[in-house]
Amino acid sequence: MFLWLRRSFESRFLGIAACFVLYLASVPSCFLHAQGEAGPAKAADDLKQGETALKAKDQAAAAQYFRSALKLDPANAEAHANLGAIAFFQGNCPAAEPDLRAALQASPGLTKVQALLSICERRRGDPSAQADMETVFEKLEDPRLRTQIGIELANIYYQQEDLEKTASILRTLLAANPDNVDILFFAQRVYSELADNTLNKLAVLSPDSARMEQLIAERLINAGDLKNATAHYRKALQLGPKLPGLHFELAEALMEGSAYNPEMEKAALSELTAAIEVDGDSSKVECEIGRIALLQADPTQAFTRYQRAYALNPSDVEAQIGLAELYRQQGKPEEAANYLRMALKSDPLNAEAHYKLSQVDRQLHLADEQKKEMQLFLDIRATRDKVKLLYRQMSPQTAEENAEPGSK
Picture 1 (cartoon, rainbow, N blue to C red):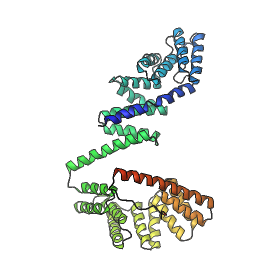
Picture 2: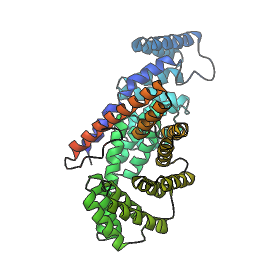
Picture 3: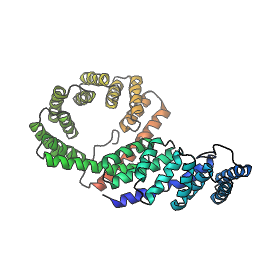
């Protein structure tokens, strides 16, 4: 396991602390207002003054007011909770724990207080911290604190080498934080380890199987080695001619490496026909047949296939783009634009759809829209070029991908 990775995530997410102090300051009595009998008037005034100080980001003054309130009302949950939170976000768990525990003793249902206390427990190696975090993670509604607890849990599971549980937590966190770079990096690491583990197990259990050959082919595809990938797909089909997905994947590999070669197109079409026999028809298969028909200058067949693909799956972006292109060629830019907008609704970062829509907008004399779509295409292409460069740096032998539409 990667100890440096665990430490980095533990330290990075402590940075959330500053945000939570501001959160405490912006929501009066964010953990709990005093319940039960009202405390002395002076205690209530101290609590109010403490809240005001928090809003002003004066934690030292706020702490003094909360301590003053506790002298008059020693069981006041609000004062204990805020003192514990202030100490916690200053990185002082030993000072935070007594107040956090006192707040929970006075009011056991304080989920946020339970969350902070569970983090402190983990900091000092308390074995009960994991169970407490698991319980509170399901209850928490505050997104930032739930993220921090989730990261803590993910690190615990990762240290325990329980990759399945780690991945499960990370999927939940990514659903709430889809653009968080740190969580994305953590997830990529865990998913890669899971993939490597399954690959190793497959290699041990069945090194000469069709599935192993298929997996080797997929790895070669990702590395840009289409020639050897095709060879392994063919070997896989010799071992398991009825295995789902194999014929379609081979057809895709043949088309990627065809360079508009009629013989390759013919071979790919044969594999697609076999795919329908083995797997049944699908929008992906129909789109691939439609693509071949376009390459063979058969727009009627292409239109039939793309329509069939759209009927099988109206959300298939490739079918939408294929129909749009055919309508554009027929001189029907309005229909083409409708399908391209559908495609971009499903896949906003689809460079091909933006490029084709810019062409259609030109036909429709929509100058501003045409410029906007072309700029989006250029921006997306530039971003993808950066990604390609990063991949080449990671895998120097990887072949160049095909150029984006309109790049020449």
